[in-house]
Length: 248
Image (cartoon, rainbow, N blue to C red; front, side):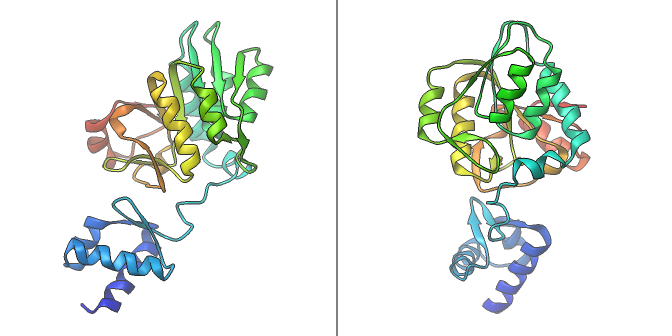
């Protein structure tokens, strides 16, 4: 197969799937891993794809974070199931971290545990927590306009003042090999630090995120329990080997 034919095949596969893995291209195209790596480097230089760890994604496809308003109206029923399951994991008197995001925001009405303290980087979360008379702390730092999430070095410094019994984090991708991922490296830093400061971590992701990979890695699957509304059967065996699944 000629170089340009390989390029066309790679780009076509990307447009069909949104993301491709390095080993998948090696198997499908029947060439060496080093050849595929060179192809991806060349295609990235032409701005036809974006290389990610272990593969490639469409340009701007996996590195764009949907806004809060857009995400609010997606997968509402699934998020409600996940939010209820997650809230049941909170015990009386615990200090928890709630990540910014619509699924963690949906947890707040379901929190029944008493004397809970919540730290969050979500502006919308603090408003909902205060309305429910839950003791809350909002991290300081730079506010992302479209997601209302606080990020940056100041937020990271703020986090080091706290220790959490549990943290509840959103993720845009859940993959057995690549772990939990999110589009924004700045938000990934905040999520990862919350995980490091917590006794136990939970990742909330609806079934549409299973098998997806986005730009910035949080941590490996085995480092947190996964809460989802329904695990797709073709992913169940491999995901179960990596982590505990809590599902509706």
